[in-house]
Image (cartoon, rainbow, N blue to C red; front, top):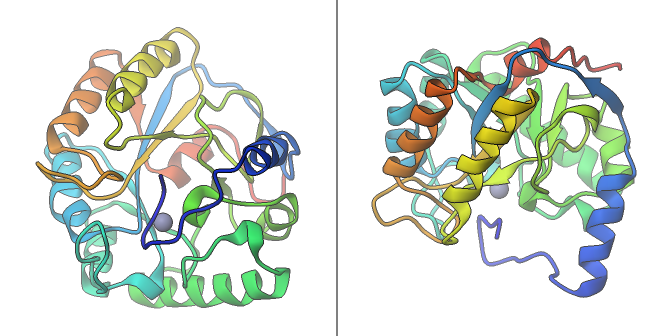
Length: 259
Ligand SMILES: [Zn+2]
């Protein structure tokens, strides 16, 4: 359930097997051995509600998040409401949040040619650097969470971390080019899954990443509510879990680009 538009990656049995095979075939294997647990809260595409309410909740608790931006979607309409503007993306950086890459045209990288991906990511990174006045964009999330071994391999030197969407806590041997993450969406057990994963993270430290899209009282099927976000942050803070944006979390976890 990852969409900025009407496109849906294949849900066929073959596609599901393929997705797991891709996750298992590590393009940039590295180890994460943390003494303290880390939670990273991220938003993909950045609908305006994620800027207003999502970032608003994070600011209220004094924590910083990550916003993965598909530059070609900025200012456009979507099934998750209107997307943030370039000025709002810049403001997120000014408020201490991290902005990550998420493709320019938001297409499925698992089905694209290498040259097409390279050109698209180049545009995405150049525009983000210009918008945010940053030297480097360190973090990336695959559009729709979809990828292939070739896409992971060819992008892994550009970014310190790349986020996929298969759930799990990142610890032990992980693929820096396809980190695991929990989706916070409209499914009934989504919040409960994240809350119970926090208990697991507390028991066995690692790096846990969650992602959502729009944030409102009545979110789309891809989004969440401000209350759910608050509940997650309150629980993480009560368990003494550090909440850090992606690049900072990656540094604490000892991840580097040329691992
Ligand atoms: Zn997206």
